[in-house]
Image (tube, rainbow, N blue to C red; front, side, top):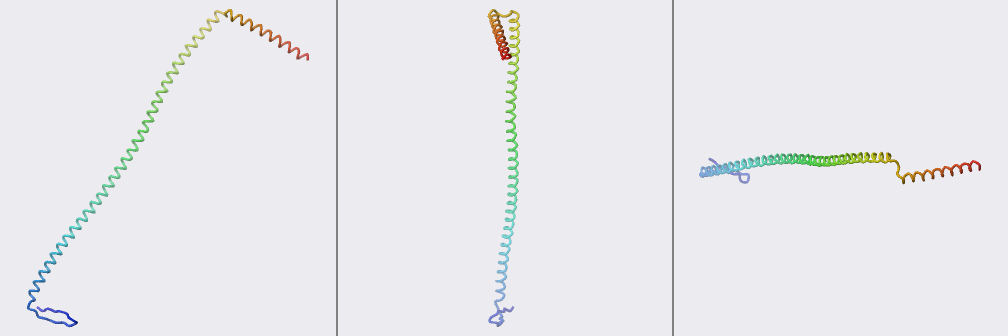
Length: 167
């Protein structure tokens, strides 16, 4: 084997008796470097696998986040629907209360109408009784006095009417 070295543009060829030792040393060094490259390749592959796992986990988390957001939106929608039902049920309760009050007022009106009809019949009977009895002495005296007053007013009116026609 020959060993070549370049020095100031001159080539020196040296024959070296220690070349086989150097080859063995370089072979060992080459094997050590290849071993280091294999370790580095394994580490690189492991790092790539870890990176892929992290990406996948991040995608799953994003997926989970989206799922959670969809569920939250669903629950918000259900909550709004429940609130609307609650508002509607309170309106229904108010309407029921008003309906109950209307029924009570109708019952009171019917009772009052019945009482008024009874009182009207009683008043009619009293009038019939008074008419059947005729006027009392005080009523006859008052009617007589009112009759004289009417006749006197009519006489005065005629006299004034005659005086106006003459005048």
